[in-house]
Each structure stands twice: as structure tokens, then as C-alpha cells.
Length: 227
Image 1: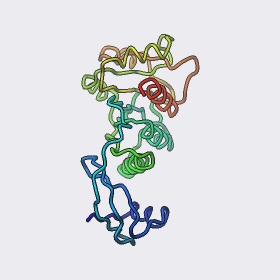
Image 2 (image 1 turned 120 degrees about the horizontal axis):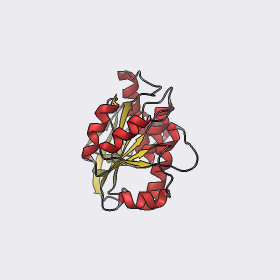
Image 3 (image 1 turned 90 degrees about the vertical axis):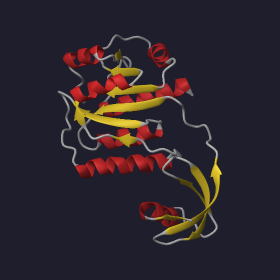
Image 4 (image 1 turned 90 degrees about the horizontal axis):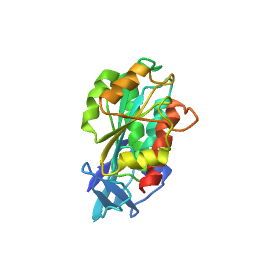
């Protein structure tokens, strides 16, 4: 027997209008999914586990993390929501020289994490992307060594065909970090520092994308190339 409360229970009862006997999918902390039969509804939904469910193979073995310079207003919420739908495994918010957003309190961070969870549920993912506490650009650079490929999106990078660049960069790797800069773009010093730490500069094309569009567009292209 499992008990489900909070927003999940409200969604089951008020949005989906499920009742006793209806089946739901329950995912445990190890990302193992089970079919469960609802026994009781209310503020707490109680359900009995029926059987475990085999993985559907929908998730790629390529682990794509997104390092996003914290944007202003609520643009980070858009990035988290859409990149979660596109398969991002983790988010690494950071501040750099031209960052517009620099005030991320505990409440905003908690909201980002709730949004990642609800977005993962909406698109049928069994895992929820992790969201790290925001950090300085220098601290982010030190994380590059934990990845097999670091793709540093920069509007001043050489304009080489994106498809060929991505296919070459993603061949025979599993852990990849996508780095997206702030509204004003990265400085030359930041781009040079990224290269020294092992990143590959990447042009996303002839148009300069907004900071909250770049990671989404890049993940969509990678998904199309690796599916």
C-alpha cells in the first residue's frame, strides 16, 4: 500500500478525477515504476501496488546537463520546464560577468525544483532532473572535468555546420554539459577560460538566440540527432 498526498493527490482527485479501482503509475525513489490500483481517494490517496513496469526505453543513455546563466525575471522557469521535457538530466545555474539575474533565494530555488518535478511527471519521465544551487562562473569551470564533452554556446564561435559539430562531439561519450550564457552573452575572457578548461565553443547558427531559447533549441537538435 502506498499513500499519496499534497499536489499529487489533488491532481489525481480533482484534475484526473480518478476513483477507486482506477490504475495509476507510481515511481519510487530508485526510478522504478509500478502499476497501482486506487483503494481510497481524498486528501490522501491510497493505492495497492499491482506489478512492476518494465522500462519503455524512452530515455537515452546520453546524460545531458544544462549549465544556464541565471536570467532575469521568470525565464529560468521556462528553461527548466522545456529542457526537462527534452531530457535534461540536471541544471547547473551560474552567475557570470554579464548575468542579469543574481538574486536566487531559497523560495525561488524550491519553486524551480517543484517545476522540474511536475514537468517530469507531465512528460512521462521516471526521473526528476537535479537542480544545483547557483554558483559563480569560476566554480562552474571546475566542474568541466567531470564531463566527457562540454559544449559552450557562444555567438562569436566559428560558424561551422551544427549537425556535423554535434555528431563529432557526441560520438562515444555519455556525460555532456551544455553551457548557455546570459542575456548579454559571454565575454571573450570567459570563452577563453572555458576553452582552457576543456570546453568546445559552439555556434548555434546565424541568428543570436535569447538565453531562454538557446538550451531548448540545442537539446531539441541533439534529441533529433540521437533518437
